[in-house]
Length: 74
Image (cartoon, rainbow, N blue to C red; front, side, top):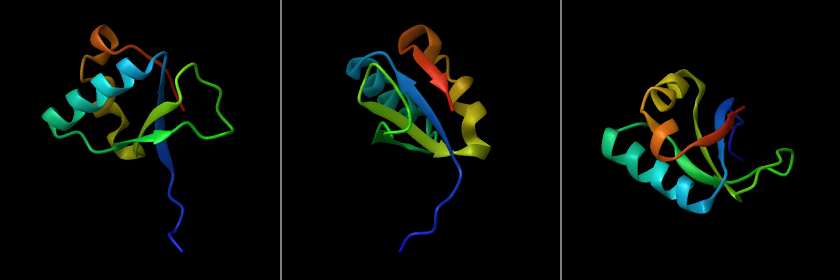
């Protein structure tokens, strides 16, 4: 069984925004992956970007708020 680790999760308002964020993160070498939104979180889109907590600022500093607006960071 995989050990649980604390993650930083970003939700999006649309699938298009989530997929664009994935593309930007991959191009910039930002750690993380798209996951289904956990049931404990409410979001307009069914996808979220999950990444190690220590890299959360990398995502926030990637300039995505202009091209793939995320709803919130959890």
